[in-house]
Length: 498
DNA sequence: ATGTCC
Image (cartoon, rainbow, N blue to C red; front, side):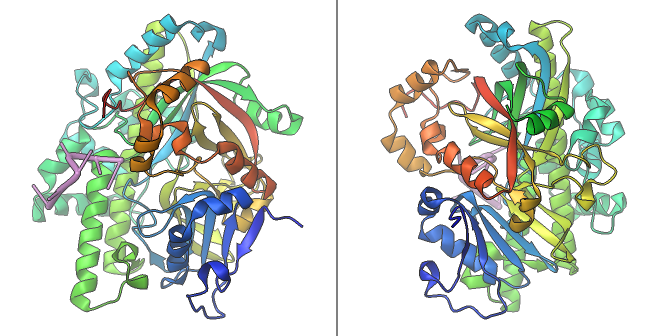
């Protein structure tokens, strides 16, 4: 009997207090026993609240799940009719990207070379709060006018050209641009103009444009990797078809829409909550973080416009970071070339065919996983293989590139988005030893831009990535085509003695 | 996630 993939009976022991009508299908839980024990009651409660919320057709809990804003981080929530800002998340279109260079691994064996790369990247792509554009040359400066184009067009030809980003990279994005629900660019422009005019937000928004090309903080990072292809000939061939090469140095990035998306999300939460209160509407399970709108309503359309603009910002932010990282490599290795393998989000709602109808698939800390032949891949270069899935594990145990299998239909064509936090930041700072964390990375030949690695971001603050990965593969959702071994990490550094 | 509360 396969215990790696179980349907959580919502009338079962985890949820005995919640009466559920027959109309509700159970929540799908992806996780072996170790993983299921990692969830905790609050994560299940949030999943059940999400499942019982209006208009929701399906909820999937992935092995990296933990408590989040309204819905767990590490879940999928689908609705044909309703849009939920909480289950998109506050960092709209937080995503992963993978840039492969033609530098062979041997070239970055020495710490001296790696230090040079770290300095070259840190000079161009800052971590922590503040502006990404602080050292940008004039040619790349994002003013209000270009920022407007970024927010409304995403990775359009004009935006890519202005920012010096290779135009071919747009084809390697899960979505290179996002439009308003009515599919017209003018609607987004009108929404942005309205925010500037009616709500006196323009100055603040313009200041956020200056964050383009930066990582921010928290779990965001940039990491140099050595690519190791799968030993399985079928999956190795898929990796090679995507352009991955054994022993190449690649760069994995994790970040999102920075202050720009944050402001859009928070404004939406505020206005939707206040609208619920004015109308005397009840929040799902009494939780204001599960506030929602019907997608076709005026409020729903406004949210979808703001989500699209946050997503456009995140996309261009990521592509710009990759262009700047490639330039940094060229500082150290003149003439080196690089190609974007893929860019894929784990905090977004997308319209997708699911269970026989078009639905809003909310992925909150979950990654799209379309296998070969999926209707939304038809006509793309990934039609015959499925698209790359980029999963950060942790620097010590590595990260993974996967391909979806037909079994992904059981998880709403989604997998996890990483390892998933197992310790709160507070608990990690209290319980994990700083010297042990730093020694661990040294032992694994990994260096970092931080004097000391942030304790709340240490590998052991997260779940065992091998357990998470085996939960996914044993459920038949996806298979690994390549693993990524970290060589250096850029993160928002923690002070030495906090 | 976020100039970590407008």
